[in-house]
Length: 127
View (cartoon, rainbow, N blue to C red):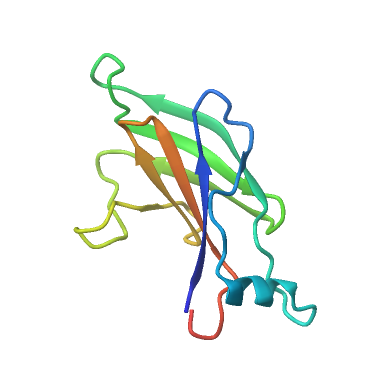
């Protein structure tokens, strides 16, 4: 089963770095602590060069671009959202959008002006 590590960026003004807002399940923690396994859990991440465009006098963001970097996992990718972006989740779930590296997804919460980052971590033979 694919393991997801969810990382939360609390507010846009300090887009430098954020800590995890997710506690991995015990099985994933055990996998990460196993010296014979190459599983690395992201401890922190950086969102850089965030740029948003509003088409309604700044009330909401209609388009945005940013870069995601996870030093521990050495994942670096760019992320984009605009009117043509398609969610990777079923309609009944909160929309998630893929970054260029499909192991990284994001949710923009406009009402909270916050960004939720999701990095797929420690996949096994099933995904």
